[in-house]
Image (cartoon, rainbow, N blue to C red; front, side, top):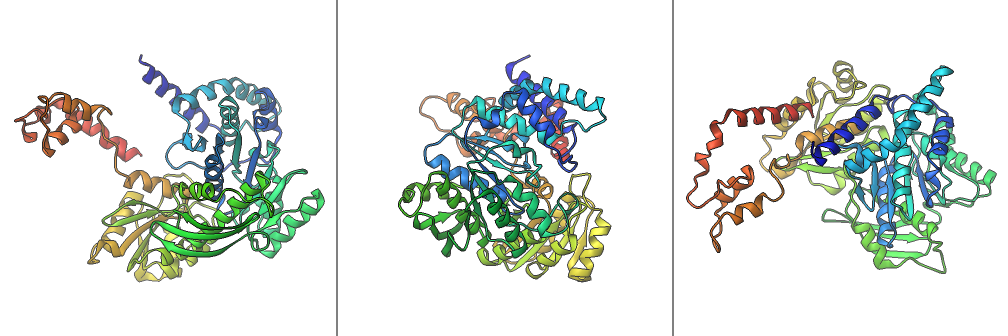
Length: 521
């Protein structure tokens, strides 16, 4: 077996074993398991200073912006976010890049014996096993310690106080806007949820807070008084003072802790992303002890913001017609998306493809979307927790009205229906389909809509040129044929229509296998 095959099988095994554990939707509010696991593997969460990020909306984007700003400062960064869109490796990034499957598999093999040991101990007392999220969190810390990184940017999974990531001792604790979400685990009031989020605040840490609802703000400030922390707050110590639309994003002026930072290009859409950028900048200023006497280098800040990416956040995955995905999964997120679409794009028609998970505020999400969308197609995503289409349609009909709601049991079919609904718009650029309602919905649509990678080796193009007589260039058809086959059927005089593999039964089998893979994805 080749090294590549070994890597693939090792990663597949690691991923399968992780996914067989308690899913992220099933939690056991207790830090005992993750603390024991950290102890077994040498406390890797203490290997570098940490910026720890909790909140309801904007956590991932804020974490990505923080990481980009830190990396632009010349630091080796470790970034942990969740959930992932396409690959579990996305959750663990070093210097802005997901770790390789080989590195992921090796890290898993290192921690696997300890997972087994803790599972056996839990079974003796009828307790819960190590959860999937706890295991991946431990794996991330182990990777960061092994790199090693200079700083870790750690996003909470859910909550804060008992979140598996809360084994860190943060240098800076960040709380993004707190809203009603995960109410079955965190409580059904802003006060209860904010109490959980405030659990990441630790004595000796610095703190930065996004603009909060009064109930949440009161809880966070009370926790700060208890710990003798003086936080910096959006709208008080820092703020976005000016924003204008720009191609692919927006231009910002931010009043930071160290003064005003102007001419900042942020390649993300929406007022909510500008607020995330201001919060991220404040967190990085705290980390570097910037303030009235010392401003961060403006050119470094500009470069850090300009390099930001946030997949799954108003991400355009196809044109003609435009298809956009977004991970919005609660009313606040839906309102932010609706506002950003209206502000940043000039679509004459918007059709939503909506699939949500059970337990979410479905009516609140749909009500937030209704002013901005001409119609919606309700459907299911790949999660077993996806809300039944009939139940979703019933609420949608009440919010949107009968003429604006369509239903399909499968997401791929729903996307086709949505494309058909914008098909009669004269200019493709004036209409768009937006898939949202869950991170799973965004991830599924992304896989379905994104261009498929070529099946040929990376050196196919070089091979194509090497097979031609010196000095000769292939025409477009010959080059394309060579790239598609990677074999050399691009010699002068070759007609792509005469491809001898077209009648090869094995090649037909390969194509059928590719179709199956696409359907499974």
